[in-house]
Length: 269
Image (cartoon, rainbow, N blue to C red):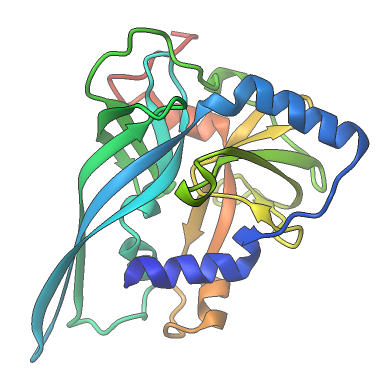
């Protein structure tokens, strides 16, 4: 239920609409980026247990399986993804005022499977979570035979207001988990309390949390995550729009968090 509420709101904010045609150099840049970087995006199959309890009504629990996206950030296959994908109810809890104080919602990520570009599956586990940044880090529980394609967090770059960026994605099962790309503009740069970029949503296009974001030169900018804040207003479309926002967290902040994991291989030591 919690996941459905969050996903419907994100869809209403333009995260899953048809993308208009872009021509010329933008399309060429996107195609080149797809060829070089598409395999840095992976699909993660998540099994999540959810429990809800309230006075006078007892409790109930359920288990759900879903898919999310992640970005490979290390040659050994370490992945960064959106923490809210592993705990969708945390978004609503973080907004405050959404539920009564006596209502208790708990979720637990019980299983993670990494789906490779060729369709093979590798077991994974969460090794670090950072609620402040909406970051979760997943590492494979078995070693890969070959070095994985990844984005180098040390090579992150800044972008300017209204600059165009390309977001890579991997679609769901309905599209055979095919790779996709969408073009957005940076419509705002928030600098306090921390810097993050706000991508436009009016163009539409597939734009999944956990996806990597690049500039037109193919340089890594950051990862698409979700920012939420307390605001109350109940579970209404207006309250959700005001209190949750898809953002691009810069590479430097992801790098700082990734260095806290044992599995991260930092090219700069």
